[in-house]
Length: 231
Image (cartoon, rainbow, N blue to C red; front, side):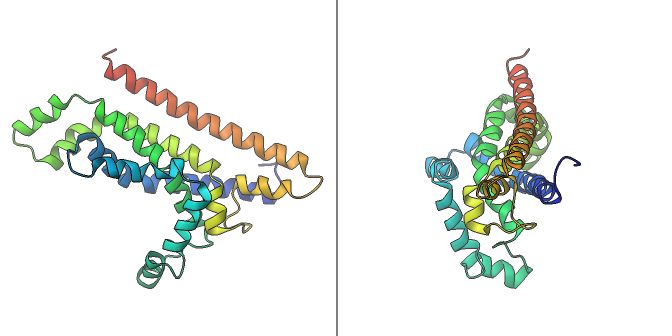
């Protein structure tokens, strides 16, 4: 973008990349959890719901610290992923995507859960009585009906990922070109005198992208509500 400096453009492109990856990668597990919460009747359902929604109420720095303990190079999961798959999260953009995905996960699950609950269970039961297995019922009945919910959840997760700061800077620090996203770039510029114009540019850019993503999510959610109401 011509009105941004190379470092600002780098932070913007990195934020978009992290937002897209976090939204795409978190969708499958979010869909599984949302389906379990919407349709499942099992012991521990409330506990699962509480754990899933923890990032909404925990201080982000605590979430980032927990990620560092678990997914750091010496953490139990991080060491295993590096030794078996060569996948490193700590102080990498992949870690920033993981932190953004964790922080946006409850919102994505909520959007998907609402869309699944909006489906008439009679449709799924009718397919089941015709002999379709549960996985076939899900793929041929449930999944096509929640496509708007999937889009709304993905857009909401993307918007939330763009604004993620606390967990990201705790887990992957502030490394230009690797983990310095838009919020971290704005925070860094605020520490330097005479950078008001750059802070304003990046802030306006963040607001513009977030508004477009949230507007798209609301548009899809509205269409979903109208369809559920039979309009």
